Image 1 (cartoon, rainbow, N blue to C red):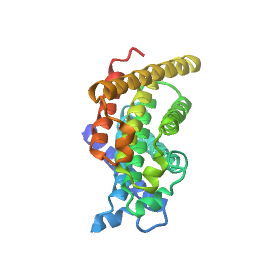
Image 2: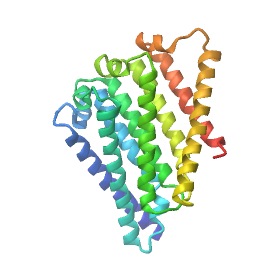
Image 3: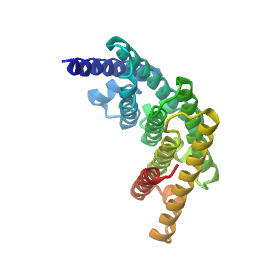
Image 4: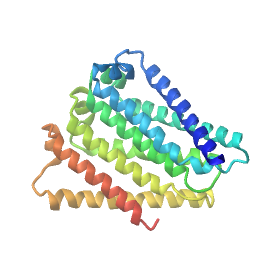
Length: 281
């Protein structure tokens, strides 16, 4: 009976958090077009659906990692309070991801206006950032350590994710800001989605584990990230040069060839999953 009550109570907590998330999303922009009611009523704005759907998915992914943590509480009521508290933190992290995406990942784009206008490319990049944030959250919640460490390593993870995305944008001959924000280039956004999610998975592995001290934790996380990122870049290079010789990715992006980008994004994500599974760090 206790297990059934716990199950029902946790479902109730999830339902409340889901409703709060929906309220936050629908108030994020004053534009009526950036509202999931318009999607559900048949307006069919896929760009808005991508933002809202990935937000809800990110909430579920991150919440899964909190279940064991909340069960450590001393009483049933305290367990629910802790679970709800972690949920509020996750909602705050996802909101931070939306802000970071608009101000730092796509700084030249008003994301909410772009989504309201049906720019699906912006929605895809936002989806990558939101899911990436959720994966990073799962990394910070595995293992033991103070809450301060969870917050610090989440911030470090977000900074690393943003830094890698901005670096890729800077060194690429393709102007991703213009291609995604102004032109709605799906090929560019799909490739960026794959990069963001793959990097986030590497970061998740780097910050997962029990705390053994600030210095050792930071050193180990940065070493793990460096090893994982180099391995990911190496495999992507081999895929580009060996499996697809003569194919110029940048040219395909500018030519808006979205199908090959789905393949390349999938390879990046699957590579990141494998790299983190076999990594010695």
